[in-house]
Length: 488
Image (cartoon, rainbow, N blue to C red; front, side):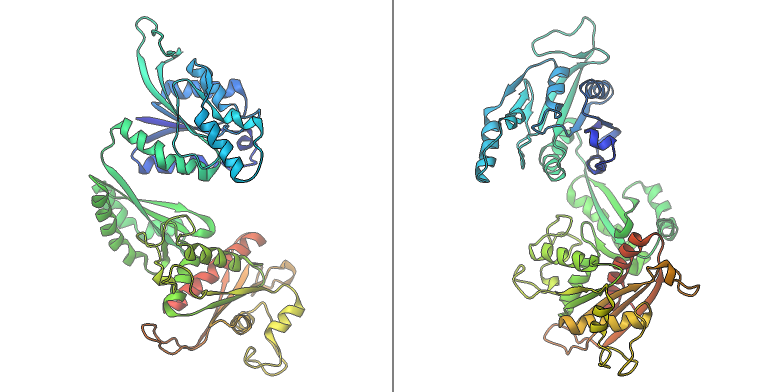
């Protein structure tokens, strides 16, 4: 079965919104064993949408249309689909009542325009999942290539080959689209395609090596897998989220596919070593928090160049973990994800927080207060001296300050040469200083003892100031991960 995706919305063509929906759907189709040959973007124009639909139906067995299901005048996907099918739109009272109930639950009156969303082409059926006001649709179509749809009850032209096609229409709101794809569309496509095998995947998330570097490290294994054919490996560069190494396996059932994945994972992890920091939807900060929880430690951060990025990532990850989900939405306890026990919160999130808080230090006054020149506990250089902030020693002092000022057992800090005028040949623009400070902790029950340790790193990072800030944050979290696990 050949499937293609049509994304509707002028904002996609203007670059006002990046079309991440099509890429996600393409990935899910591949994992479901469904061939996807084309992706099209089209603006909110009747004639161009109709042309895109007709071309897609001429060349593909199934078409997934994303977007254009809102209540406003430019949301015309339903109308164009009905025209292509050669049928009328009719009001579905069940959908209308559901939309009314959504507005009533928010104590808001429903604009009459929203009833447009309850209009359904004759012969189409609503997708059961409807998290928002826009219902999805499944529309079977009898199609004659080069001619068009055969209307219900009509006879095709003499000698014409009638093709069974299907159009799925889903909203452009990502979480609504994903719920419909996972709940209805992917399963229905597999049923229509007769896909009996199960395809599963596991993502190893890595940091510290380029995509080409990983490919070189795994070249021998890739050659072996290419010859075997199952499982397969793929690389996905994900910016500050690192390089993803995806293992995909096909089996007669899910259990068989997972056995293949776990066997391959056992081969890859020794080859990748410390580069692997998390799995699937988990991320660097969740991995760091899980390790802190395992050791019974708390974390405070102090940031200059990163401007609160570390604190934001850590607080978001901790909130997700306390709620029992990973940042990407997977439930904790799924294969490869930290469990509730790993976070130090076995009660499901009501225990003490691992992330104590963060300080963004952008002024000299604040950094002087944090480093507290009169205290040799923070500064090792004497009663009246503190090291230059943009230095390894300065980052180390700031990490100790983060630990002491937040009352945490671990401090993490980032500083950098972020002003080109302050750059030197020895420390050019893009030099970042990362530091960790850990206070000694005695053993407690099943929690091992932790030795006092201060660690600083100096690294060179590429790009402009925004990239410097982003990469500094993730690099500092990675340094903490490696330090906590005894690898640095």
